[in-house]
Amino acid sequence: MTKSSYPDILQKYPDALAAVVCAMLIILGWLCLSFNWIGVALFIFSAAYVIGGYESTKEGLTTLFQEKELDVDLLMIVAALGAAILGLWQQDYYLIVDGGMLILIFAISGALESIAMERTERNIRSLMATVPNTARILQGNESVEIAIADLRVGDLVLVKPGELIPVDGVILEGWTNVNQASITGESVPVDKQVGDEVYAGTLNGNGALQVKVDRPIENSLIQRVIQLVEKAQTETPPSQQFVERFERSYARIIVLVGLLLAFLPPILLNWDWETTIYRALIFLVVASPCALMAAIMPTLLSGIARGARAGILFKNGSQIEKIGKIKAIAFDKTGTLTEGKLEVVEVIPIDGEESDRVLKLAAAIESHSEHPIGIAITQAAGQKNLQWQNASQVQAKTGLGIVGEVAGETVKVGKTAFISQELPDLNPKLQQINKRLEKEGKTVVWVVEAEKVIGLIAVADTIRPEAAASIQKLKKLGIEEIVLLTGDNQVTANSVAETLGIETVYAELLPEDKLTVIQQLQRKYKNVAMVGDGINDAPALAMATVGIAMGGAGNDVALETADLILMSDRLEKISQAISLGSRANRIIKQNITFALSFIFLLLIANFTGNINMPLGVIGHEGSTVLVTLSGLRLLL
Image (cartoon, rainbow, N blue to C red; front, top):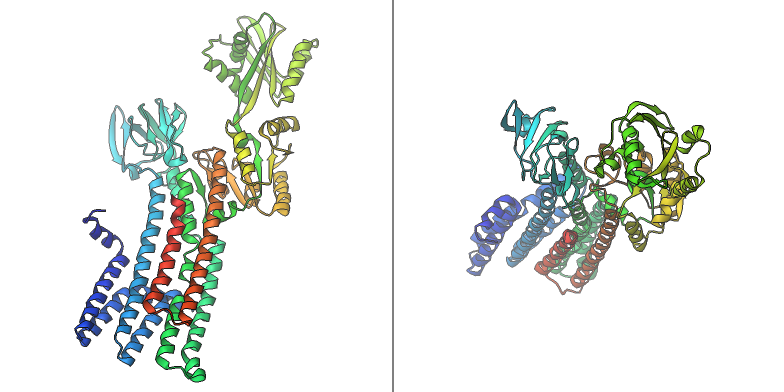
């Protein structure tokens, strides 16, 4: 840090400036006492008390009068003023220095906490790439630069290579690769072409794009993510709520015990008033639960920032606590464990035919279909750069297949039931292959040309490449049961589960059936996570202890429904989230244990007379700072 940055820090953090001024005044007052300039010293110490203790006094009195509660800030001020009054009474003016040190160290602690928490907020803000302030819109043959705020739905925005994309929209012209790390946490660029969505704050690669704005600027994905993170920062998790309720009751007890310690020993045990009151004031300082109050929220806020950096978006801090305690996880199949789209996985021609010809003939017919199987076949032929003739007289047979003419010959593509109606004597060998493929969870269509079967095409919703490894890692993390939930048939579900190493399968489920399974798991394990695509899994996601949505970049329902959103749609992020939650819970327990232990040690030192006010303050505030910094370990 350069010297020139110190004034910037003081300007940015007024509580740090107050602490610096307070420190200078206390040093000056102490020097005046050394020269026996009592009047000047008292005036300087008064200024130090006011400047250093203003914020704490303000917060303490606000809590007292508005919420009718005592808090730590007010206890510190009472202790400091008590030391000053005792010093004036005894004419031991160095007790005023002790009170000033209490206010100073409390002010320094507040400043350090502010700086530490600002670091967490800065990490959250830095997760999102800076969205440009202006964008180029196309008007006729010219581009005009306008402010982002002036963009409207339907505007056509020009994005040059290497620029940040300024808006959410759909590509109307161009091809590129886009770095979506600011949204998904994944640094590997994603290929984008005409018809694909792009998002504000992501980085365009090497292609020029024309993007049509498809939503108001304030509703862009990056803005919604920022709003969710900010909301997560302000919501208080249950553990913190408990500590805050405990603090209020604890503060009353501390005040009562402090008063008893100040007055009973001189009356009952004939102790001298000065020493007793001094020890009572130290008691107010060291018994205050500042470190305990800082044990939880810095850790959870750091966890929110760390998760968002990796494309794991927690809705609030309580979800970090909960996910670290998960014992069972239920997975939806389609779109979660699988890619969510059909692909051609196998082409089986009859003897004498070529697989490319079978695929090409099927694509000639299916290119006229919008059915997912037809789209998969057409895409597979296109990926192999196959050229097919245009089909005519194409007719779809709902639920069965499709028929058309190619080069004057009738071509049929359809399921076994459809083809067997007109060709009852199907090839036994192909029938055996058909049964095998169906047992593997694949959908099979037959391709017929001129009333002759020429081959089979198998399509399937392919399993995500990382799914099997992710399931195994979850088991190693201590997840006791992993369940597969799907609306698909039992054969397909069993095939996927066997491939992934999942023992428990529930198939042919409606959304309400998934909800019932989640309730059963909760009765058995209490803490249960549900992983789904955020649409038809919404009831189960809402019921689970932690609902995890494969949010992708821009799934609106996922952003609204789930507790935790995987912005990059990568299953391995679930184990990262659980590890993050487990680590957060460990740090919170460590912080609470440390805070309570330190309070106990300081109390013993006070009652045995082995600690004075400055040491008590240093110990109390030092433990608070250490606990706060401990919580920030999650950022590393």
